[in-house]
Structures are given as structure tokens and as C-alpha cells.
Length: 426
Image: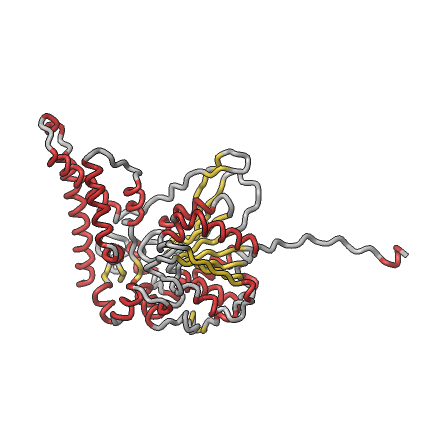
């Protein structure tokens, strides 16, 4: 009950700030005040506008809103989102391109489950659609999942990825962004032993903590500094009565958001102060640079407590993936069994979450893979977000990833004609 009261208190704080912002916006916009212009009222209205939007976004899952793409004929192609596979903890969704006639490489984009929705990859998705048949893991907010659905930890996550890969078939190329990189590597190794025919053609790991200790950051230091008991006591709460998952133990998205913001507190404070100034001067817009970024950044989701705690314990503290000692369903997975899947790692030189060295460690673990099937790239001056959604992604990384996919696509050879009867020819 104590954990539940804390969750409701946190939600009350968010809701109260949203209400205060809405009230300030309404008061500052009161028509009668237009008869006596006052800069203070403009600032009150602007503060209310930014505050209400900020705290309201924290409780809403953003829409995908994928723009149309231009087809080979020069005509716009509408994008629709379809559920390929449904599940209590997440769905496999397909971005269907209308009127597409040419066959494109099938790609599974594994989105992070680290506090943000899969829509954080919206720009990544849009950039890949012209050249791929794209499927994405769309994880659900744990606060909306009834306790009756059971647990969901790193092993369940890995087995779900195995299910998705089996469903999509061997002509699939997998791209894992950040958090899921080590578990996607483990899922591929699991298939290499259990169902080799279902392995993907290629695996691209972007900014993931394969070996967190290869180049420690504040994130890895925090994981080592806190004991598991401390983490459970300070970070885990029970979902309050407002949501379907009432009573479920979770790591709240709002706590994760607070951690993200604290890492670059001055930068975020300046961003919001500047936005209030722009709003007061009438220079802000619904889709300006600030709102476009923070509408997504502030939209957070809860993780199941068992997923969060097992991630910290097994991936960061014990380094089970880095040591090739990860166990799934009672079976130790051997990453060295990957022998046919081409593996590429991508890192950002200025990444302060998964620093350079953490992701490329995957290549050393693939001891059974020929060097010709290994590749790596470090994006100069690129931060964590930039390697999958920023300028570095658009200009450098995306073309390299698509080239890697093309180089490792092995279309089925056409059936040869029946050889002529030598005796008849004679």
C-alpha cells in the first residue's frame, strides 16, 4: 500500500502542475486584460502555456503520425499502421506502404523499453520506410497492464523477440536501438542453437550496452553504486487506482524522466526558459523545434519492476551478456553460436548514455562469426539521440545501415532448368 500511495502522490503532483499551468494560461489570456496590456500578464500566460503542455504530455502516448513518402513514380504513398502480432506487454506492428509494388528488404526495428514509447523512433521509422518493409516492437505502458497478465522480465523480453523473429522469417534484418541491443543479440544467439533456420540475415546494434563496463558512464556508475535492495526500495512503486494495472509493481516513467533531465539539468532549464520567452513574444508554435522534441521526450511509460530490476542486475551489475553467461528459460545462451548472421555496431562519439566501446563489444563475443560478416561505425561528435534520429543518423548512419542490409540480403536463387539428357543429345 505504501508503494501505491507514493505512485498516486507522484501522479497528483503532475496533475496539479498541469492544472496550475492551465489556470495561469486561462487567467493570462482573459479578454478583459487586453484593455490594459502588461508584460507580467504575457509572462503569466506564456508560463501557463508551457507548463500545461509539459505536464500534460507526461501522461499521453503520442500518435505515430507518420507522413506520406514519395514512391518511385513520384506519387505520395500513405502509411498505415497495422498490428501484426498482439500481446499483453507489447505488439509487433507493421508500417504498410499503400500501393507499393516493388519488394523491399524486411526489417524488424526493435524499439527501446527504457521509459519512452516506441514513437521515440518516429523519425527513424519515417527515414527507413522508402527502402524497407518495416516492422516495429510497440511496447505497452506497464501501468495499463492488469496484474493478472503476470510478470515480464529480461527473459520474457528476449523470448518475445525470438517469437517476432520466427514470425517474420529468415529473410529479415534486425535493427536494435539502445536498450534492447544486448537482449536482441541474445535472442539471435538463442535462435542460432534452437532454430537456426529462423535466424535473421543481419543484425545492427545501435548504441546499446553490450558491455557497460567497457567505457563507464553516469548510467553504469549508478547501476554499480546502488544495491538491488536500495533500487527496489527507492525506485519501485505500485500502480495507483487510476489505471488498469492497479497494484502492479513498476519503475515509473516519471522517475526515469527525472533521471534523464537531471543528467543535463542546466540544458533543459534553459530550453524551457527560452520557450517561455518565445511564447510571451508570440514566437512559439504548436510544432516548433522545442515542442516537437519535448512532446516526445516528456511522454514516458512505466516499466514492470521485474524488467527494470533484472536489467540492472543481469545486464549492468553482473554483465551476463558481456561475459556470455546469459540464461533464458533455464538454458545458457552462447553468443559464439552465431555463425551466419552479419553483425554491425553503431556508436556515437559523444554518447553519454552508451559510450563508445560498450556496443562494439558485441563483435568480440561473436567468436564463431567470420570477420567478413562484422562491421562497426563510430559517428563523429554524435550523441545518444543523434545516432538513431538526428543529423548523424540521416546523413551518415542510415545510408551505411541500408548498405549493410543490402550487402547481406541473399535472395533465393532462381530454380535452374532441368539439365538436358546427355544420351538424348548424343
